[in-house]
Length: 236
Image (cartoon, rainbow, N blue to C red; front, side, top):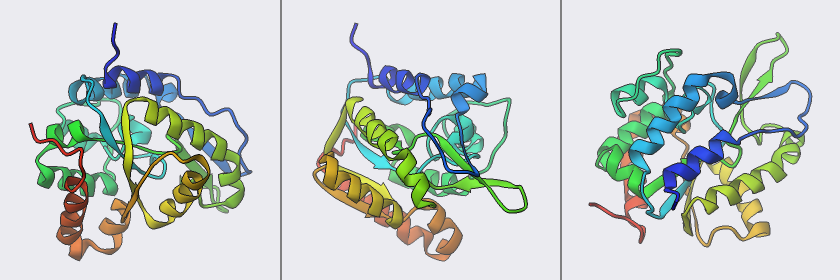
């Protein structure tokens, strides 16, 4: 039996484990192990939008946030967007994540979730949430590049994950990287591993929502221009 793109992503997420070392005060959260409903809604999402054999371009985030994919298992998708846009209700959690707001406003302007997801696959080089403990004992979202020791600890897992993402059926002639600092690290990995032919860098949705909200429409148009000017664009 031929596996669809959805089958491959679901298998990838089911087998996700991080067993490597981490610096002090950092932890990895695996929503697929922590909440049974995450696995359920993630599977519904990919079966809804990816049950085909189409090649897609890769949009690379940083690593999931606790309130986005760290809960839903779907990159840049909080529970609000998952229900309102995708029609998939999550009962065990209710989250609002600002990167998800920008991403789904952009997806709407692009032509809607169906058109967008048949052309693109979003994920991260480190596909699990990372948190760090502050001096006062609170746990906050962390990026894989926030600490050089952290990056060195997770780098080999990131390279392996990127190669697994590609094996799902991605077109590697062009890739879209979200976040300029993220791009610096991905460029380094790509120069060593030769994974992608062309790297396109876009501002991260969180940066836009938090610091450039007045110019949000301009950034949406920038995203759409970049994404639709690639050779894989399909509008069925």
